[in-house]
Length: 282
Image: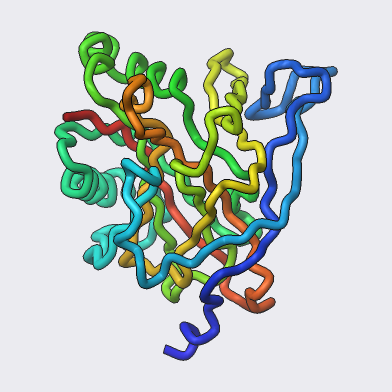
């Protein structure tokens, strides 16, 4: 189709927004909503770096969760969820598809719990838009906290086995994605010292953690050009195998939306959904 010929392809250099630590060396925090009077929204800043991002189109199968903490799944049948506008409809129709997809494509997995989803759209009244800051959605502490939150009676047993948080990301655009594609850094190329826990403070008093990412020129960044609705990107935020001293698995993938300088000014705005799942086993 004509529009696919306009999709940017190949290696690109783009500006990515990395974590810059608090000037006073305090623990980084971010208030999810309006902060208390007299406090800042967050106590860390941004660090912008020109970054080479490699196109993995044509070699999608070369990347996997154990080494890279991301994986591409192709030729996924059309979803029974058509509109992706109603949360309950998404849970009823799309969640079961995601559960089966994860059980099929993550070897040894035997249980999946989908705990939330986010729709992002580049439109005036959208609740969420693409996030242009390099981050990881969950940390080790945040993942264990979620296991205890959702499975209070089974948590001790579940935390003795393998457990992960995996996001399933896809565009919702009818045409191949052009605007604000998602960039990912292979987990194997990311040093532990460059992954910084950030405390997320909620109005209810609940505390969670994401991770900010320091820039490091040794990080290897990738994107999938012209991603379509029949493709899924698995983003592993945490894998308990990474806690084992002898393990080579790091199990966390920094990611961010980015502005490709080659994108047409009249390109269709990005629409996407990410579903977050706890995955257990083997």
